[in-house]
Image (cartoon, rainbow, N blue to C red):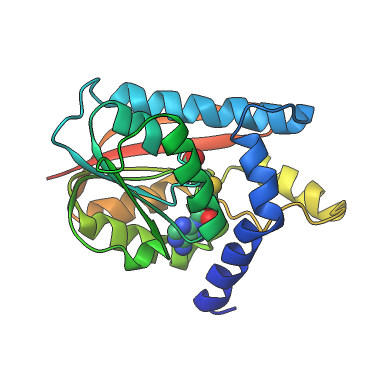
Length: 226
Ligand code: SAH
């Protein structure tokens, strides 16, 4: 499958059924038990990342690549950062705009963009990319990471679904009982591969974190330029 296909599939998903599913998970309305678990896991990821950043981000330019509905972009802007929030899904970006406006964020503080993150231009003090790589196989995820690393002048923070034996087994079981397709394929990545990729781009690993609830697993890495 070509990379164009992967991105096309992900884009279509997040403009249709994926939008409905994730808008709710990343929201406050009532959801199923599984979705609630994912919501809580994702919130822990946001909390860890926000905990790594200073309370005052004034004068920092931050790129939130694959911003979804703005769950991270909005609190970053509230702390004073100038945020560029972009996503391949127009529907997600539109929802993020609605939420940013509802949160009272001045338009001067968040600029939104629609498009593949591998087309983001410019340089940023911090580039953050949470829970996006899971949609892409290894080679493609690394290419995206290299692209983002080149945009990051100071640091990059990225999260991904770790490849572990237990998760691989769970995934296999899931493939035995596929049911209605709820999502695009989920790809896991090895911690060492992500680290190698960042180190090769001239970064040093500064902090790592992880979140695991019943249905949500993420590793988070913060890397700084050497
Ligand atoms: N980072 C957000 C959203 C995670 S959901 C958060 O943590 O809250 C994954 C998001 O990645 C979706 O909104 C999806 O549309 C976006 N995405 C997937 N592939 C992308 C790509 N190639 N470029 C930009 N965004 C992408």
